[in-house]
Amino acid sequence: MPKVLQDGARLVIVSNRVPVPTDRGAQAGGLAVALADGLPPGTMWFGWSGKRSADPAPPTVQAAGGIVYATTDLTPAEYQTYYHGFSNSALYPLLLFRLGLMNFRSEDYEGYRLANARFAALLAPLLRPGDHIWVHDYHLFTLPQELRARGITGPIGFFLHTPFVPPALLAVLPRSAALLRGVCAADVIGFQTTQDRINFMDCAVQMIGAVRRGPDRLSIGGHTLRTIVAPVGIDTEGFANMARTAQNDTATRRLAESLGDRQLVFSVDRLDYTKGLPQRVSAINRLLDRHPGYRRRVNFLQVAAVSRQDVGEYQRLRRDLDRMVGDLNGRHGEPDWTPLRYMTRPVRRATLAGFHRLARVGMVTPLRDGMNLVAKEFVAAQNPEDPGVLLLSAFAGAAETMKTAMIVNPFDPDSVADALDASLRMDQAERVHRHSALLAQVRQDTARNFCTTFLAELAAVPAARPAMLTEALS
Ligand code: ADP
View 1 (cartoon, helix red, strand yellow):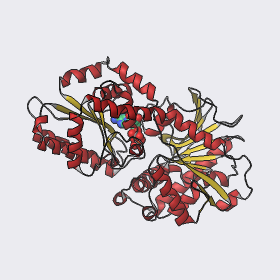
View 2 (cartoon, helix red, strand yellow):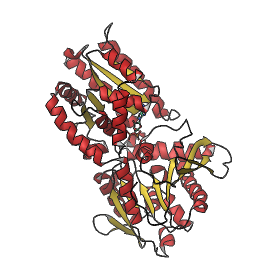
View 3 (cartoon, helix red, strand yellow):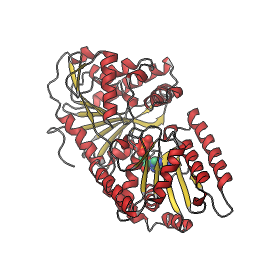
View 4 (cartoon, protein in one colour):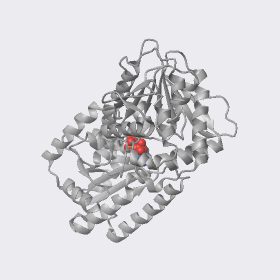
């Protein structure tokens, strides 16, 4: 780990869910993957334990792998309002451009505000002078302001893993000005893509009167903050090694044997409405309708980890998908060929790496995504001499840099079917050419570089704070 903190400084990560290594319930997700490889030893990670209790005790502190994890339970009311309500049923759909799914209730927002305040109250006494605080994601927009209100004047960074919407969309969400004011108490605010950063700056200027100070700085109430673009990444070499080794794994060998000489099109996602799974099934239907030559010559495998099953929208998605997969296999299947294999059971990361490497096409077609690490994992897992083709949604953050992927509009099943056909027919020279550019990119934008870039920005924040900061922002 290169030196990225100021002398004697400790890094403190704050996120909604803390992926404590001993916690078997902690699910794989972009945040854990993005930070796993990039944290300096001694880092403290604060947030929710994943458990609920009526009267949460003081934070539980435990050390593992050089990181100190400090976690608190949520109360049932916080779970309902802060987590399930405002974060996942209002903010998340809005930030992913799904206005129609946004469900706002003022009591949920109040729960969100209070949970952020409680997190700040628990965290403040654990902080030491000189700590660098790095807050993650949309659950905690108001935490920077709550920390300032408790006298924390050190550097605070905030990184948003989801996209950020333009003003016309953000204005639809009640209390969005309060969210903007809350996060603007940070010193550095990071985004996955240039477009997200532009959207955020436009919102801050138009909705809370922030003033532009050059291309990347904003000032508000005497406080100046910097916005940056820092795409999240993966441990590219680690994942490539895992994929190479997994070739000898039982699960990968069994998949390879079951395919025979058929080509594999592979997808893996959380079972989430932003991932475009129904649209993907439609595109596969179109391909098989229009190109019957692919019968028995190709197999699709979709691994979809069940997520947020206590949210109605996710239960509906699961039911819809079960039906659509059944329809597709019923319509196109043959006694000795099932076109689309579909699993919602958990699959080990190493096994996924092996599946990626077997695939001729990686189909990554979210309707909207902050970055999408699966796209990067697919590229890392390939054999560079005979790589598969990445079919990537134009609306994943990854598309801003992964330009030699086959870029598609996931809302248009015909064009996705055409791109699938072109990918399956692509000759080796073109596959190698496209993949080598993608691999260079994925090797550059690693998890480690993401952390290093962000922490370097945080380390550059002047230590002396204007005394007025706290009042100005409240
Ligand atoms: P998100 O953060 O929205 O879930 P990303 O694609 O950015 O999406 O990151 C997801 C991470 O979780 C990747 O590292 C991916 O390999 C992992 N993952 C996704 N789906 C599964 C699954 N079904 N089983 C195991 N890991 C998964």
